[in-house]
Length: 445
Ligand code: MV4
Image (cartoon, rainbow, N blue to C red; front, side, top):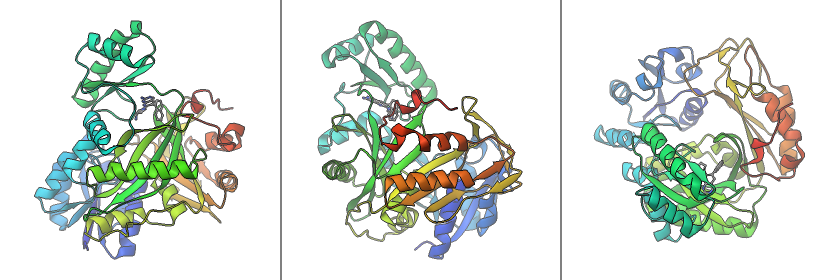
């Protein structure tokens, strides 16, 4: 097993990884930007190395600085967390060249899933259902019109290098094709330095349900329950839960089998997630695969009683997985607490936390890096905490969450706590009656 892991990340996920390393008897190296010198991940790690100025490109995205930190501290592995370099194939490759184990899949696996057309072709070959769509790249506006006519409107144009909504346009009729095509192409070129586009039939009012998977170095793959991530705003997830209130035992079996096919098709190594769109008839379609640990991994950990970070480290260290699949035994809900003003279009609200009281008690887990006196820097993601409520039933988990939210006191900045409190009392949410469109019409009072 590894002796020392460098964590190429910050915030709650850096702390989350440090905690598991400590339990496993593995030493840790934190890296930090000058803006994060007073952060908890710096204090809780065994060693810490400053890797540059506040901006991400100078620090948490700066590969030479991170590799230098790994070399001088003699780290034998790097955990990338989520975001930053977690799905950067070049970074994974450079780690290999330095003989430092990248805790995650190989560069080839990252590349295969990073290019959405390649990912989709791989899934079709593996027998995983995908949304009907164009084959290969869209060559021109005329080509786009021809494909749209074949599959029928509405359609959606997506960037092959995309994901998370960037370079994506919904098209309702032929008069909209040209503008959508040109705009998506320009946005993709700027965002990804790759302007390749493809087209799919637009699935209206879908649910976003994803399957957690794990694969080891010996070709064994398992699935580990689902997460419903339909509660999103502008492609930012705000609430996730497991199991999905829309799930049935038959659908879970079918989606679990499809997820195993998907991961096996690329001999997947590590923990990963297969994202699906699910329509109102419970037809499901592969959307993309995330080749990293995700923010919302905690709801899965709680319902199957399993440490996914420990599993990542063990898989990277060459330990075989059991190979059995996991069924949800509990219900867990996660609320992302962001330093944002929900009454003001979720505008970022960085600054100093003057007063803090963190919830606790039965069924409550809080993953966070904040403390009283901590100043949230303006340079990074605005997520400052995750509350995970666990109970035997969904209704009880919602009530536990509601109670935990009411205990949380964060003064000095605005947070999304009032938004979540209102959501937990919403009748449609409580009835499990929501799709990815839910927040478009949700009004905070
Ligand atoms: C779709 C879709 C409907 N039909 N594809 C959004 C982000 C990117 N991962 C893909 N996305 C979508 N792809 C087809 N063929 C609807 C969305 C979508 C969405 C998906 C999941 C969660 C929230 C969403 C919000 C708007 C659109």
